[in-house]
Image (tube, rainbow, N blue to C red; front, side):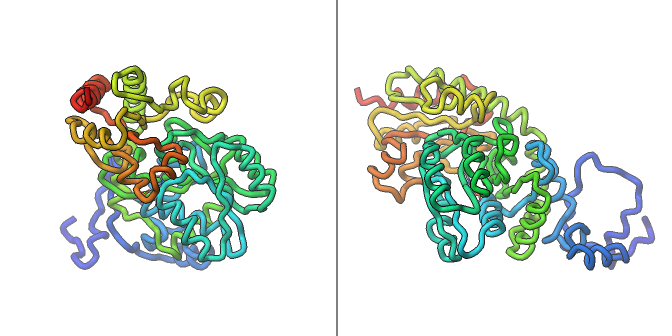
Length: 394
Ligand SMILES: *Cc1c(COP(=O)(O)O)cnc(C)c1O
């Protein structure tokens, strides 16, 4: 150790110690030797660790963990959830192709479908994700290359019939891409239900601490994984090693975090359903949920997720006051952290819609979206109760 080379510090680590936790390989480049050159020439550098936009051991550690959660053969980490979605779509689609996509998707995904993909010569056909006949009609009429939807929608918390939509897509020779960010691999693994690719924002439940922006693409199709990797290399949507470490670290507690958050969400949904001032509770674990029955039993058979929506009487004006009165929940967008986050779609995720458009999209006035954290179910129930009581008009 004393004869270290200050110009080549990576070479100084000669001790035979094995870290329990993957080191953060905060390096852009790796020393090359004859094997590296052979790989670079043989596979275009896709396998060898030689430059961190291609691959990096810390990023690979996070990717392996996402793949394990999905029981999948391969995941690729991306710089954000949007990088996962955009990179997957530009991999699968080319000019002249058609994508049939759910109308109920994340706002920036919606922009991608409305603005960016059409500019690349891709036709986008939109359907109501919860109307199987609409999927069937659109796929039969438009012969898409890709079919796209979200397992659990925001903020309606509707559940897509993944096996049925996968069958419709496959019958037409299309591939099904599913955004599983809200449901998470704790509640459902869409590849096992027929999806071909899962895209996720690891910013949310996967990392779980609201401290890193990241994404993941997961598939059992080895060739497709290589094609996505090539686009990550050329479009540059790779994840930074330090960010990858945070994602990896967050996933160490993924199972226990989600078990507790889903349990607390269920308690909140049950206890607030009959609360004075609450018009309605939307949670996939409730019998009055529109997809209760075979769809939820198949797609989310066990835990029903950590997202709950309440509709309070008195509309958007009242719900804003409720939001401000919360003492435990934090008024913020995003989701999936250890802390409970509360937001109202009308002034954040869905502000660009008119009230009527929101109503048509299943977002009534007074809707409060909760990403349930780990503070404890009773503490959260009490917090919501006091905030609702404090804003009662009579
Ligand atoms: C947050 C989110 C995204 C985008 O993820 P980023 O990590 O913010 O890029 C995509 N889809 C859904 C459903 C999300 O909630």
